Amino acid sequence: MDPSVLAGLAASGADVVVQAMATDAWIMVRDRIAGLFGAGREQVAGELEQARAEVVADDALAADAAAEWRSRLRRHLAAHPESVEELRAVLAEFAPGERGRVVNTITGDVYGTAIQAGTIHGGVRTTTYGGEHAERRGPRAGRDVSEGQAGHGGTERG
Image 1: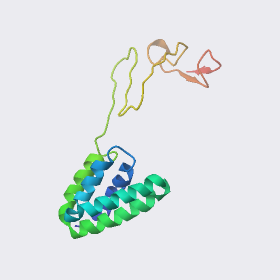
Image 2 (image 1 turned 45 degrees about the horizontal axis):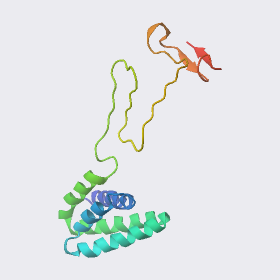
Image 3 (image 1 turned 45 degrees about the vertical axis):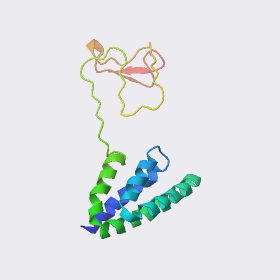
Image 4 (image 1 turned 120 degrees about the vertical axis):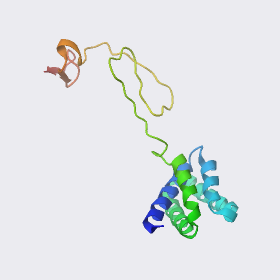
């Protein structure tokens, strides 16, 4: 396999490892990455745990951990090309942005509250603004409200 492809996969794998260290996905990522190493999986799992402990204690070491695992994964993939597909599966499952793209679309008029989000952490509160606003329908359509809201210190352009 092309060395640049292996290097890219290894870099992505190392990024997933380091990013997962502070998440609930850590154990799954650790076990899947260690599993790439076959018979040496127990030792690799221990080394991953040691790297995690170091990064959790001092997040400035995250770049060092990523460089270490990038190199280890690259060498492993070069020696064991059968591991490439398993690493790709790990990346498909855990890499940020690799889980699928969220596209939110609203067509037509919205009456009430519309919330569009890929992931929401915490509560969602809605508030209502009763002041003037830029009207996008009817006879005022096309006018902008700049420097604040019209009637509230701003100026209307249109």
